[in-house]
Length: 525
Image 1 (tube, rainbow, N blue to C red):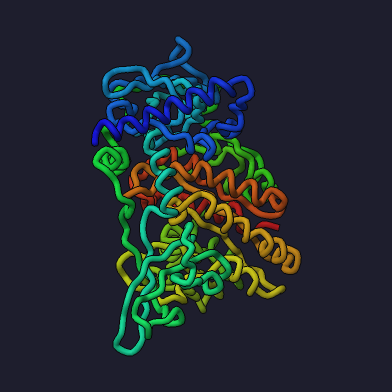
Image 2: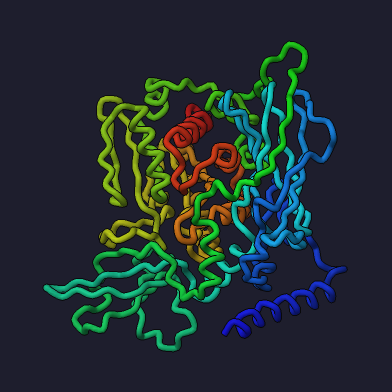
């Protein structure tokens, strides 16, 4: 068994070597990685060729090292600091391929300061990172192996074969009868399509299928609830479990043991980096889509944008004035529900949130509402059974808004889609575009935003922050024609600089994200 298992990866390596050898002169590395923002990811084309699934050849934090590219350790405020990271495996052998997802940041805990770095893959086991010196004083640069190439490729291979890492179930009910069946966004290659219930129409036009119940009385129209098993459902051998388990363990051991210490001196009499001149609510929307990195930094636990100046007071009254006469639509998943919770805390009015049940809360006294609704399936509700009406496509919500609306709409999908093939996310995002165009054309007073992915340290059972790199690109491609009308809420650098182990950011981080959102969208003309 062991010999056969290791023979397959070796054959994959031979095939990949032959391919690269024959196509090296025509291979466009700019198509393999995304250099504009400075953060890189493997394309699906590269992932399909596989890799060697042996834990001992994965990047190891104790063997790998980070060091300055240039000798001097003293920098001026505003300078760029360049470091290099060389990865080694558990046996101390130099890694010769790229594709590992590294997270690099600079911090000063005494000042509650941090800033993320732009990481570039050199395709040979080495990575460079550029960091901006944004506060005077001392700083330490650290690197973290967020996700290994081997895990990313294995994750993708599972999605190619099984369509989803976790399993969603449909529950059918009639009289005293009850039964559950597995669901999928695809019927696969099955020729027996009559074994499936096609719930695409019920899922607002997004592909969704569930196996028919073997109980005759429980026909497809008896679908009543959905739930999920929040664990990897695909059959795995021990080696594959070990590979996928690398990003579930405590993240601390995967921070490189070596770090870089630098000193930043202030320029002339400037104690801090000068703030941008443009107020955030006057920043042209197209500028919010620019992939400038870093686009901000933390100082005294407050987020400071490098694109604009936040002129919105952090007060209950300012938020109320912004929302007066409007509904703020925060549809999506539990990480958008966190935004709703943070706003309730700031605005001091009660929330009636109940898990994934759709909720619209209204402050009658101050005349505004905040709405949360779970996005369409695939959505992994966990063990609790939720009514089939729980989920709603965000395109449906936009189509229902009147022409006179002055509401603020934040489009957002992310965490649940990291469990399905990237093509599924691409299709769902693309379906939002016509509705967004129509809404902007017929409702001139609406304010529309797209919220991009955020980063996190460690997932639960296969959820990878890594896919946020690819999904950012998908949002940008799909909404390219609307970037002059829609605000892009870019929280990648913010959450790269402020570490969060779970895919739910910490409460103080969420409040900084919310205030950044409000500063960009409130009183925008």
